[in-house]
Length: 204
Image 1 (cartoon, rainbow, N blue to C red):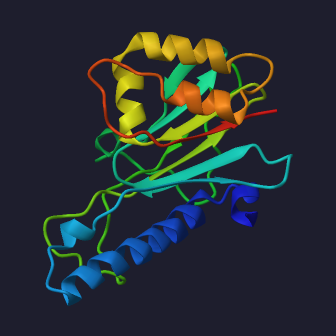
Image 2: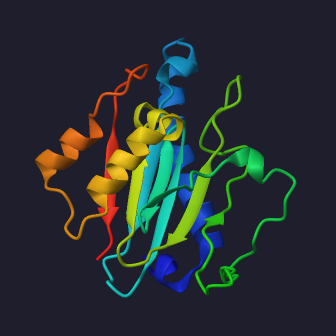
């Protein structure tokens, strides 16, 4: 957590990348030992780190696999899922570099996702693995940060009515209770039937 408070994005990214490779590599190695296609042991992994320090407003997302990362700010949804294709060939912000700011003084969300390099923790059989995704975001009071599986992300991206409904429900002064959150996250949308997994953080 000291790396989060100090803004050491380079250390965070490399350390979390190794941890992710090690965890998922064990699944693929187990498959190889059993003579099974490693893709049958593949898994999505999506994690959100928050410091226990109330003065630290940095939120760290990392993982592999499909899904979504969204921020609800002032009643509007922002899709901040790291897209690897957006950063290929672009310079990567270096170790300890301060986050850039918008004209309004708000630090921009950082996207440091790059294609996954070879890992010492995994035999990495073909086909290539999902790329590692990493993002840091600076929270504002009143924000809602939503991390979810593709079953929730796809309708949220594809159906404006769902986004409007959730924005109205989740922009109220008090966060919803657990039962209300579960009901909201399971709202039916025609054409989308995948299982949904979601975790949300309401910023005080």
